[in-house]
Length: 305
Ligand code: BG6
Image (cartoon, rainbow, N blue to C red; front, side, top):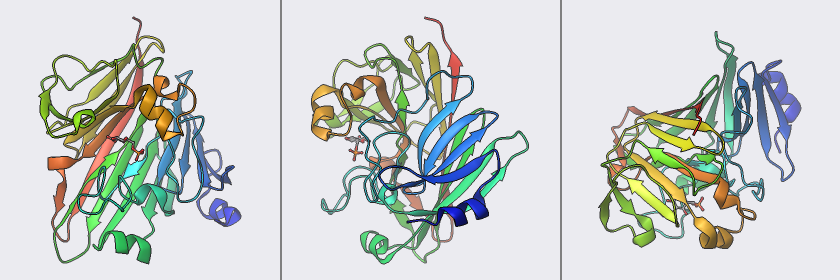
């Protein structure tokens, strides 16, 4: 268990950042500032909650049935998928979406920016166990800025002597009024792999993405900003990104959510994942000695249907 007193002494910021332990056993940072609130778990470098002051509902969805236990991934918020996306290509025994989301990270810095936003930097803690799953010299860090927008920079530094190939995603779960009523713009004309159909065929997106069944798609070769239009919550959520060439759109619908067990009753209706990723053929090669950054920015605006 983390030494809360030591963390608060070293990295706590009065009026901005406080550390506490939540039921289940995880240590989190509560961020409160003039722009809004956020909660970040040290395990996984995982943003669990974000709500700007202008919003009556959180922007990120967090399952009411989520588990907050050491070694378990949290259902909701922004899980970090790294260093591969989805199942491991060669070894199905390795964890889906990599190991970054279920291992401890350490705090590197906390600071208040000029506009009163709060910036937090964490780094994944490498162990014999993580090196056994991925034997490369790569350092992973995350920098989270809680301001009028939520900005996340996921940085991978290849400190080894060989090039590395990796997959990744900031697997954001957004809170919406009802999945049947929303639409997602920005992916018109893009090709995608349809994972509900096995993921082997390419299809093309015509018009905005709308939902009437389980949806699990990897949109390829797209750096476009996506906009979720939500008539019930009367808002638009913007998802802008750089350093990411895939966008994954996911809603499990009824049967899969029931099988997964940590969605809660009807939880799937109130969420949609728009994941800024480098997946499938968009996996990234990082030359030795260089650094790759995946950057996202989320913000909302009011929308009247
Ligand atoms: C999405 C995948 O990114 O994550 C889905 O495209 C998957 O296929 C979903 O079901 C959730 O994955 P997990 O490992 O968090 O249950």
